[in-house]
Image (cartoon, rainbow, N blue to C red):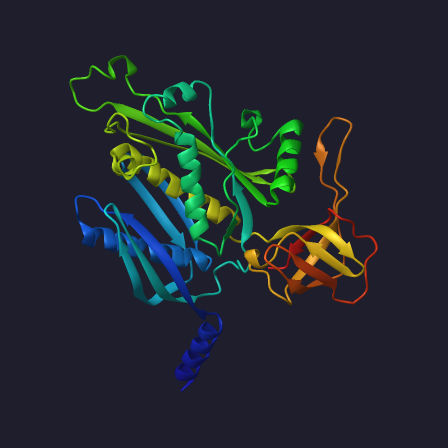
Length: 387
């Protein structure tokens, strides 16, 4: 009897620590060698991966890519969630790829992080490191634009984590070569803070094309051994737009056969079906997962943009999954640059709790939970969600 009672108590504890959630997600996969069935299975797998990500899973990739194939693959999804069941509710087939929409029943455990709100992020056009602009003229014209667009498309699909702003077709002459470890110099930091304010975004994602040179360049066009090898290497930086801190920086690299026909547009499906294109595609997928893991559990930060008596307007709203009744704290902005030019964080968090009273697309209104206006709050101060 004691064993039965104990089992019942454990079961009740387990039931109390999980919750079910229906998630509708979309997955994509290219059709290779006319194998529609395999492409469909990969698209479903991609959709289910997105479903786990949306319920707070943490994804870790350690992969080496060559010719579009994985030579080493350590792929881990850290999640206490599980997929109870799923149904394919629609399928669309194009000549080169297939798209499926899946409704999945996710059982979420207490081990997943809370990601009640999506965070605003703006991809900024990748720039070329020294010498790589010239290399891009050899079959990779505007590859920096297309890589940026590929990141944008992936983030746009995961609106539970990202409130993705349209990517910016300019890098504003940012020089991220000034990064020392994960530290920016004063000018770059201030430039990024001002840029984030201008773009109305919490995070900025930018990258650099490190290496797109041919391997063994002396014999690129005269090789009798088939397609030459070509490098692909890019770095990705994630910037906190409120502090100017680099919160994520990583280099991704691969090598693949250059089996792209002369004159092929990097935006075309034939490019992305090549060994070289598939290698870049896998690297972008890996990098997007790393960025997702970095910010999925972070709280929403928003600026106070207007004050009307006891109402405080912030630059985040329904697009960030903010709802009436959500709770925020407010920190007074006392940041400054010291005599040595170093940026110092000196914000003061108020003890008062603030509650969302109204929500619009990209704006929400906060009120003090005590119903009394706080005269210390100024435009530009920072509001932070509680979850």
